Amino acid sequence: MSSKIKIILAEDEPALAQIIKESLETRNFEVFSCKNGEEAFEAFSKEKPELLVLDVMMPKKDGFTLAKEIRKLDKKTPIIFLTAKSQTQDVVDGFQLGGNDYLKKPFSMEELIVRIHALLGRIQLEKNDENISIGNYIFNQTKQTLDYLGNIQFLTHREASLLHLLIENKNDILDRSLVLKKIWGDDDFFNGRSMDVFITKLRKKLSLDPNIQIINVRSQGYKLIT
Image 1 (cartoon, helix red, strand yellow):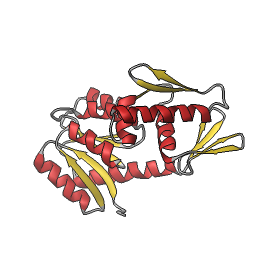
Image 2 (cartoon, rainbow, N blue to C red):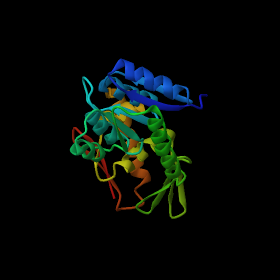
Image 3 (tube, one colour):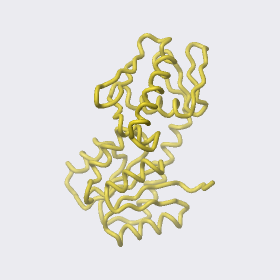
Image 4 (tube, rainbow, N blue to C red):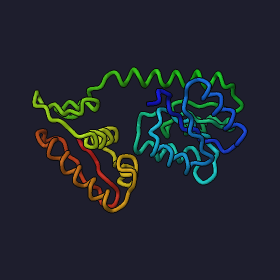
């Protein structure tokens, strides 16, 4: 098993993309280089990276649009934007869409690497606190358990992954198609029926707390309310 840290790089300038990729790979990163936003989203869904480096101006899907779609599924994976833009509003927009850092071109590779390590270190500290409160439940994704006042239920890996996404998007709509692609790998009809079954199982396991609901938002997805 590879111990390298996975990074998705989305940059449409071939020369710059190659420099970044080679520089990161010499520092024990595994880099998946994409030339547009659509490729980057596919790579994100498949590879489950630990960090994303996104150029803002890209063909097919720009970095801001890509980040917005990713944040519907994943609130925590760090995102660094790369841009030639210098307007303050562009920086503000990037952070509001879920970006964690912003580098203006041209930049040094050492600066990018320092910022990557800083973000990964911060995320690791957050991961050390594995217990998540949801109503009167305590959810531990690593152990795949739900603890309700000492009554412990064990979850399957897929149940735990689905519940984690619901919690990350608590009180917001979790997009059906995006979650199917992330957990099931495809948003076809049969996977959709499978997801419905898992939602029913989670509802049952969360039923001990009447203040928790998973509601169906027609034609969009699901919403965890607590």
